[in-house]
Image (cartoon, rainbow, N blue to C red; front, top):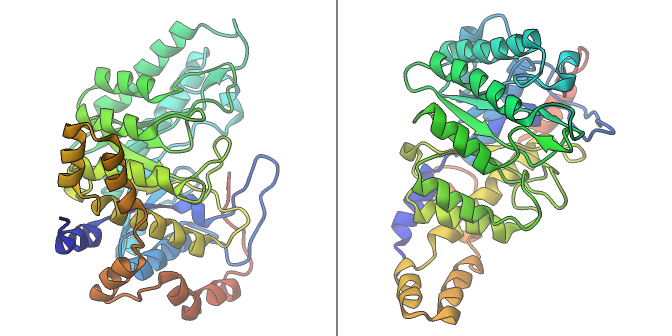
Length: 388
């Protein structure tokens, strides 16, 4: 029997981090569709993130991307975030846009370019110290397009050296989150292509290096919840980048393509006791809203994660374990599916009402007039966006 009071407490305590870049103009490799009211600077991105938190109650931090969110005074930016009711979350690095990085960043055969890339990682750690951020999130586009283009073994050595230098710079509770991606933009061999490669480097580095799972960065058919269970068992799961994909790295709203997969992932989180923020997993969004309005799309993503979590919390663990131990395949699956098929929207409406929030965050946002306000106010200047 599920304890509904405990379920509500867990949902109230849940935390989801939103990304600054999702509030800016973004798109595909072919086109970025600009929108009215898009932020023009990091402060306006933070204001939008604070708006999402105001309507959802579970998104109190915003991840930054450097240099997209570079400012002269990070202490002032941190104070501004606090005044808005949120805090600075993970610091994301960018070693994939400069022309120098055509053949790689930290794995580039040119030692000078490797030095430039590694110095950027160190710069990001310095920014963490100024913002009070715990997490340095690293994703490398490094790889090769053709057999023989570069030495695969040497590239792993270069990667390990850069990661070690960054790791040794960490202080306090700071940690590295090492992301991976199956392919793109490197098509023959990516230097961190999968969770196993990330895991191996994190093991080599030490306890303050953990894996970040991007739910869109796997081969079709990959059992992501198995990866979650494995990394939880090894205490090496540090974060998620939540999104959805139909084909490759689509970066759609989380839960949009396969809500059942999101439920299965969140069940493993609940089963592993890792939902509590004290466990240390950062549940982050990493999405590209190129045709939909930014803020409502992010609110919808937050709500989708909440719904999947609520269903995961409703799984009758005792009944499931009893069926599993008895080898009753159909009953075990039925217990699992009963939870997934539950309409949890009334439960979440109650949780929001108890927290003093509107039970329907999307409707509340639309009534607020914030969308109309930013469209009217943010006229002139240069909109923030990919590469800006």
